Length: 165
Image 1: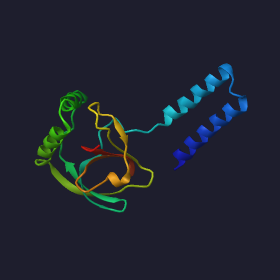
Image 2: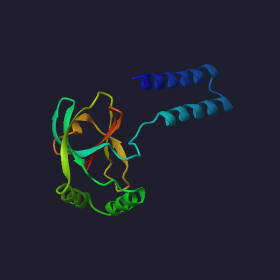
Image 3: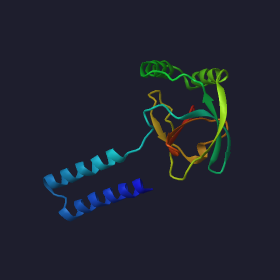
Image 4: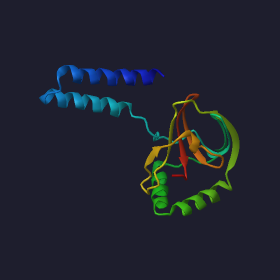
């Protein structure tokens, strides 16, 4: 919540600076650049590190979800991840889903109950083969959906639905 307040305050201060200086010439461009920098620094997206929880949603009740978290799965190196991503980008959505279903058949899981706080960033694939993510809605979290969840300590940082668009 404090981060949101600081982002809002920063954007407000920059906006007021633009208004008060009259937005002329080099001053305008400098202030636009400053605003862009604030927005860039505070932009939140899907984290680049591996997710803390990966699995299929077993149930959804309110903002509480139970996930069949994959355990004992070997983490891939960055090179292996890049190769796997490139291979899957050449597949159709159906082929990717079939391959993922086959992989999940052999993975051990444990139930994990997660409460998704209001305001948590939710993402899903855009449907394009470049792996781009777009914002998702809480209603997109459905039983049977595969999700990845990133945490910061006990706090949920981001949630991404996979295999949907």
